[in-house]
Length: 110
Length: 318
Picture 1 (cartoon, rainbow over the protein chains, first blue to last red):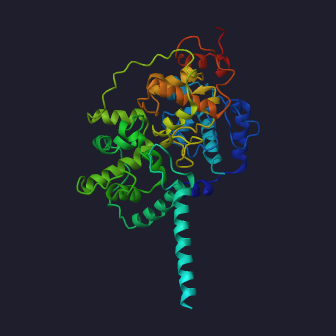
Picture 2: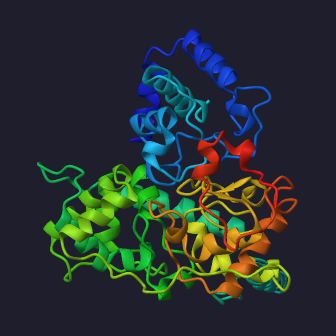
């Protein structure tokens, strides 16, 4: 099943510009000050957990299943997923949150 | 001539005996205590052989035509009765006896993500020798085994809260343990022993969900976050500012810290939780220097601080 997912991810149009856009979002919102993020130089924060293998992570924030939708939901509005979370609401649009979720899910498999 | 043959035979026999004795002693095969872990190479080797054999055997399992992953309330109740006793469930612990099993029963949310339904069914029907996993033939019907397989394969789509509500719907939610949330005193690391903490983490099955340096188990496991840097992270579970009292409180009663958490309450006693915290801090450089100093017992939820401007503002003057 995982192999199928990986193949699907490889086959899907994942152009370099989508990755670049995600990296630009990560830089703009300073995600790297709190998280280790693969492919983003200087993203070595230790406030939140490392995001180096998000595709393998079973839960998002330890509270909901780690699907693309779940991860995007948490990025867009962390307190909607877990009112106690220390992750700040960065005011990302649903599209931006989804772009980041796609990037993070692919990043662990590179 | 016969003398030479006899010399060859004796040399060969002695060599075999010595090699066998060497492998027995050096390989750790004489060490049968479940309080000590497998050597890493033996654990990995056994896992590789197991996965290859199970994959071959399970390839002959045929899925029923209408089978699909599905989380039905009555199947969650069946899972809670027969499976969660050893494997735990989202947000719920295994029974105390299972925490000290070696090898630790795997977390099945992780297994479901890695294994096809045929293999899950095979494990339920056939069990696994020398692992503690029984064959459920004669005690579950084939239909029940397939329903359990459907539930297991659906576990990765369930939040701990959703799993609880399924159990509640089926009237199978375990009663709360009735213990008050622990109140943790100061200087929790004063008499703590990191090495004892390492053994305690092994014998509480922590390695079923977390990768922990110094504790042998499945590689690449990501049910919970890897704990190698947990002591240095500024937040525990993304919720509590990281300081030793908070870490002890979190280990003892995760739901008192965050009711939504997938981390189960394993019934860890306070002195044991102190040792575990000491081990986590010993893996790195200790609690983060920027963490707020203890001023209010176990620490308050971080949400107010987070909303007030993110983690950077969590340092409050005492």
